[in-house]
Every structure is written in C-alpha cells, then in structure tokens.
Length: 309
Image (cartoon, rainbow, N blue to C red; front, side):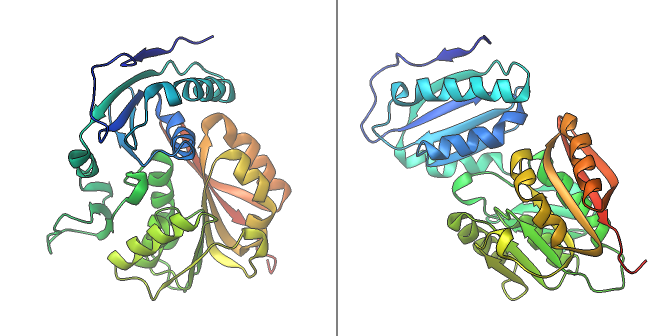
C-alpha cells in the first residue's frame, strides 16, 4: 500500500468560528476527481495551487474537525491510485483559518494567464488594459475557486482555437459539461453561433451564467441542464471535457450530435487512454485528426465523416 503522510491532526486549540483548511499535495492527475469528492464531503471551496507537487487547498465550515474527514479522504485517494495504476503518495496537512480571511485569500492564486498568443484569462476583479492583445476572457471561478485552466481545459481552448478560427462559414457549438462556461465563452469569441452549453449540475450552470454575463455574452449562449441523451440536432463543433467513464457512457450521443464533417473535441483523458478512445470513435464513423498532450493528460480532436462525400 502506498505511503501517505498526514500532519496537523493534533493541533493547538482554535476558535469555533475558524474554518478548517485541508492541504493536499498530490499529483495533478488526481485534482479533478479529488475536488469532486471534497465537495461531496461538504467542502465549501477549493483552491488549486501551482506547486512542484500539485497542491489543493480545501476549506470546510467552522466546527469541522480533521478526524471527521481523515479516513474517507485517505480511502478515496487509495482508490484513485488503483484507478490510475500508480502510487499518488499524497501529503495531507490541516490547519484552522480565521473566518474573516479565508473567503478572499484564495484570490492571490489566480492571476492573468496567457493560454495562447490569442487568448488571455483575467480574474473578474482585475482591470484589463485596452491594449491587451488577442481575446480576453474574464472569469470568476465561483465555489470551486479554480481558474478553469487545468491542463485538460487549456488543451480544449487550444483545440477550439484551431477548429474555430479562420473559417468563413458559420459554425455552431455544443459544450457538454460546461462547468465554469469557459469553453462556450471562447467559442462565442471565436464566432460560434448558436452555442448550447449543458451541465447536469444546476450550480455549475449558475456560475457559467455569471461568467457569461461578465463577458457580455448572455444573448449568444444558451444554457441547459438537459442530459445529452435528450438533445437533438447536429453541431459543427462539440466539446466534452470529462473523465473517461463519463465520455464512454455518452459516446454514442456525442457522435450523434456532431454534424457530418464536424469536429468533436474530447479531453479529460490520460495519455494511456487515448488509443482506446480513438478505436471507439473509429467504430462510430469518426477519425482522429490530432492528439494534444500536456503533463499526464491528452485531448483528441476527431472529425465525423461527411455523409455527402
């Protein structure tokens, strides 16, 4: 069994109004599933901090004690290691933080970020220079306290730029699992119309709407909590930044909703999962055009065969 280092279980007395901060140093591949698990445990917010080890800071409400979450957290990380077929060796520490400070402290981890030469992400609370080159997306991460710039999201943004720029013909976009709304927003800035962004989580839709409004795009993007199985139509470009088992579960619908000759952008994949996804796409009449990789993650851009050809 992998080693897990834990510190801070026996700490000095704290006030009943103090929040519990859980720091988890673990490989970035575990961040997304671990974040979802922490929210299921009633975590109030998460900061993803860039560090050599990859750090998550999760904040739990006052009166939460480390002993309440320790066992479940370690068990979940152990199960993740089995899924990823590699030891994660997390370092977990705990401390309490005064209620008056934590809600804004996380903002120091979110700075303007140039994703590509044509795109920069700005925190909603920072001013943007009128001379800033390229497209600007303003983001308020909301309760997840993330910037939307996980490697999988960055690859999706780059892929959108590749398939959505420079074409004279109009193109439509479906963003499945929209989360913060960042992919739908960039699609709009690249000229997509119409755009439908879906997520089965109503809270995600709420924050996506907030970010879409920040970018003055409320009239150009439709939001929905409808499952993909209930959607109709064909889209020029479809994005799905999900994990493998979620992609597998809806693959037939993703292909069905991609118009003939259209592009399907899939991310949330580990590098060793790409060959299986490409085979699955090929069986359904789609072929991989390009594979992008960053750290342990990959994204696949696939094209649906043009039935008129």
